[in-house]
Length: 161
Image 1 (cartoon, rainbow, N blue to C red):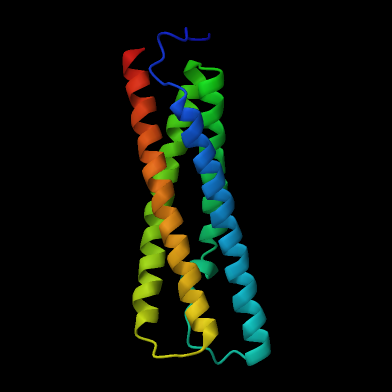
Image 2 (cartoon, one colour):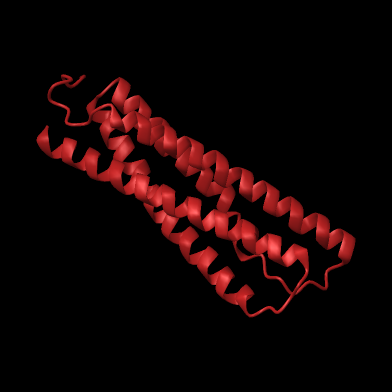
C-alpha cells in the first residue's frame, strides 16, 4: 500500500541527507581501510613494539558502521522516491541503528584519542594514526547529525499518517 505523496511529510531534503549518509559511509570505510593498512604495514616494517593502541581500527568499527550508514542512506533515498509504510519503518529502524553505531564510534574514537594523547611520541606513524582517528571521529559526528535529522523527519511522518 503506497501512501499518497501529499500525506507524507518528508520532502526532497531527505534525498540529500541520504546522499550525505552514503558519502559519509564511503569516507568512514576508506579511513578504516587506510588506517588498517597503515597500522599493519608499519607493524610489519618496524616490529610489534609499538605502544599505539589501535582501539577503533581493531574493533572493526569503520567496516560495520559504514555498512549501517550506507543502508541508512539508501533507505532514506528510496523512501523519498517511493514513499510507503514499510519503507518508512525500515528507514526509521536503520537510522536508529546508525545513531547507536555513531555513539559507539564516538566512544571508541574518543577513548583512543585520550589514551594516545598520553603518548609522547614524535613517530609519524603515531601522529598519522591519531589524525586518521580524529577524521573518523568528525565524520562519525556528521553521520550522527544526519541520522538524527532523518529519524526525526521519519518519526514525524509516521505520526502524521
